[in-house]
Image (cartoon, rainbow, N blue to C red; front, side, top):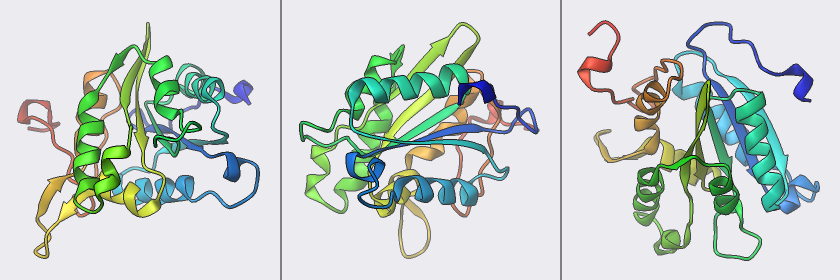
Length: 208
């Protein structure tokens, strides 16, 4: 698999995204994974330019998860890696630990905001242990974010919550992702504001 890496962008600002679904049962074929299709569909709707996507469906094994994250950042040269699943309190839920294993720095605001969004729906959101980190190499860096496992929760945490008038009441985490990528040397990513409005300071906007 790694022989095809690194991937070639069709445009300098094309985003390379790694999608990782962590599930013992889905990876064994016991049921169909829903996380990767949900993420792929959402990215297709949210981004103004189609991303390059590399996906992995793997079991809940800490070393295997960490190895997959390293592969996606170090070899595939992903700018952004989104994981789904394995973030609860059960003993098999080790995605956050594996993510921290490959991190150079933590980005705690992402996890804090995801729990804030989810708490609007269920009190059990406090059981979520999602983390976000940077993995930094001498010539490349990536943002890695743990997301929930259910497609509805994935969309809510990425987009945020809107009122009946369509105004965002609780911001989703993806609003901050493009500017984070700017700051770590990634591509300039733009979004469809009807899905999620990417926030940048005026000085960081192209054409401003």
